[in-house]
Image (cartoon, rainbow, N blue to C red; front, top):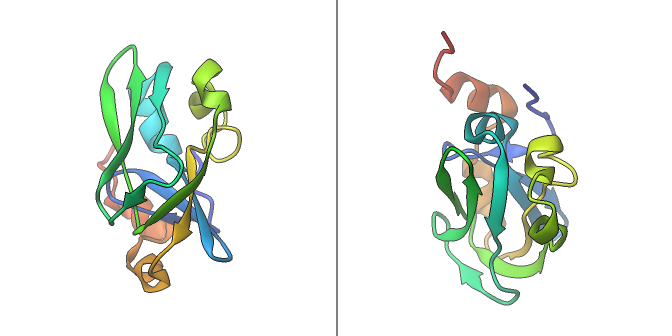
Length: 128
């Protein structure tokens, strides 16, 4: 499993890549591996505003349906439309082609409250 050091993470298994005044959001490698085969992604609308912790989309797999939560407050400025036809990108490349949305960051200080790669790894349950 991958845990890129340049990203921040949430306990609900989203990752965040800060890019100036925007943040790219996706689901972690851990999350996609537990969902198994992703078959559908519900993307947020451009211009939609979210507070930290608000549900902003859904990932559906053959095994489960999971909400995607906004890791920080912001406004959606772009969504990954390729996931409409290729939801499997989340399984194949969760940190690249499988990104979900980009949002304009409202409060940069919220990024400090997110987990580092090491802290996120420590928060995961032990695999047996």
